Image (cartoon, rainbow, N blue to C red):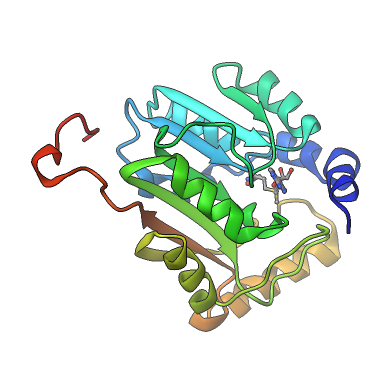
Length: 230
Ligand SMILES: C[S@@+](CC[C@H](N)C(=O)[O-])C[C@H]1O[C@@H](n2cnc3c(N)ncnc32)[C@H](O)[C@@H]1O
């Protein structure tokens, strides 16, 4: 699928309206809390959708700067409306319009696997983080399918390899159990979500991985600890 077609899908078809109407703050926070402390941090959400993670990082986490980047104008229109305190950037996640070492914390939930160049997205994420900064990258297991046009598939081992090849140190791997069972009440969807939960009970088949990763600390040993966020 060509890039314009992929963009058209997010402009015309993706369920951003449902994301606005039924945010799942508890699910997002379960992944975001691994980035604490967020207080005073410069925070980036890569593939932000309608912006709820940035909203939480600012309102609950106390981030000083909350930047959400997405290539869907439709998503960012909602993000601006519901989180006017965020900074919203319309750009491609594989070419970030930020200088090196701009952010203390980064988050990407269910987005990187849809980039046309996943390695390029991870390289960019690494580049824009400060030395020693933390990121949470939530990505699906190999068997997960959605309606989205591009879907990179990997096991936990495959994602770990990609992250380490991009320079990140993997600190821990948590689980995201998927959308809440009653996200909407379409009977077939409810049944599918119950099945997803059951399958995810098998560790190798968990739904999504919550990778907590760190950029190597680039500061020379004498500088370590100075000018860094707690
Ligand atoms: C499954 S949605 C997840 C959105 C949000 N993170 C959330 O949790 O609701 C995937 C998002 O990735 C964005 N996206 C896909 N490819 C992208 C790219 N190359 N650059 C920037 N954003 C992209 C889409 O527009 C969409 O908002």
